[in-house]
Image (cartoon, rainbow over all chains, first blue to last red; front, side):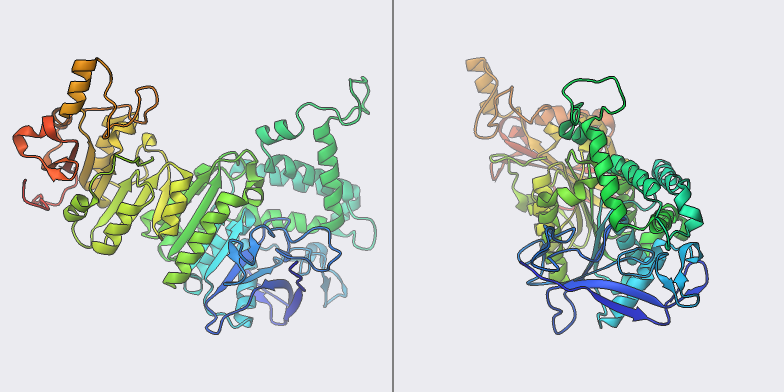
Length: 370
Length: 213
């Protein structure tokens, strides 16, 4: 059992945000696995998805029931082999699991930021990660790897700090969200803001907008699954009754699952972070900043591994292909796989075998070339 | 697409055809063995395309840039004349729309290297003639109902198609296994045929890489 302890570091001078203002101070929670070699050339930054955190692998205590969110992929002998690589994972700016976010205390007022927290971007999250990497004395990362919103951050690293990374690994992600993706985010935010307890974001001294947040999460979960995986997992089964009772106490198994997921989420996630992070994803569009995708990658990092999943309709494979062809046209080293999986967007967390083999090989050859 | 045993064109021939330092797109690149050789021996900038996950894994392990895709979807995202060579190695007979693919290859590649098993090979003819059965032999090891080869052609069929499509043939290599077959006998005695075709965006004047056999 790999035991890890999270670390917190404070950057008193913060970073200059995309909105043009400096934001400080910023606390970052992170974990590391493995050992940094003498030349500092074996470091891999793993960046988490929307609801993830810095706890990517291992256990905090021997009593923990569950390991970190990507434990299958990170550890000794695993694709991100901690016998060879030094793996870092930090909670994102705007999050609610150790890094400064809307729920953190604003030192200027002594109260939580709430909606006075600035609207941030994926680029802002990456600026904070860059500060962290610099503070760890790492000049060049072997790879930045992430899925979904993590993939967006990996892309951002590739185009914003091409000299600082040897490669980017982008899983089930996109260079910009589809209108459909933005639409789902908007409904999620609306669920939260229409909960009376949300109170314009000022709920930290009272009850949180749990109902709104759990509905947002329920919706999110639908988009992370697929018709096929839901059909297989729940079908049309009723949760507790054998036959219809013709009242509204009837619950299909899928309803019960969503309720459970929504309820569980409320305990660990801040509603305002939900609003800020989804907004950051909606804003994300590399092609807009550089004119075209090809132009973005033209001065981006040299090596990429892009993986999409056949049943992912939230971050559909065609969007990954679009990125890959832009990388190719920009003359970059890029490998692309579209893995067959029934699990929808969640596949990148579940389909660890083929994905793992690809990442393992990709890291190995990148390491050999670096 | 898979490269099957017994259908392994002599890579030495292709390695000899490709200019040093050129760019290569290998369609149906399999496990990346050919590209690996071209990258190491000919210092090419190479990319592969294959349909199968297992092949993609092996290419990545070799450090080769590879794209998982289906050739039947064409090459619409590849720029015209964007590669010095487009290679289609032992795959033409497996695609659903060979004419479309050929058109796309001569658009994208300044030169195209395509090789395929020659269905006109004497042993195939004899099996059909004397046994009245579809040929199954060392070069074509599949039963008709269980074969990836859905568009077989003879050497002469392919030459006729190129004429019809207006694609100039720059060079031809006919092999019986690993031995070269003299020109007059090739439709009958070659097991493998390899053509170098001139792409639409060929450098002018057109360069032939190797003198004619």
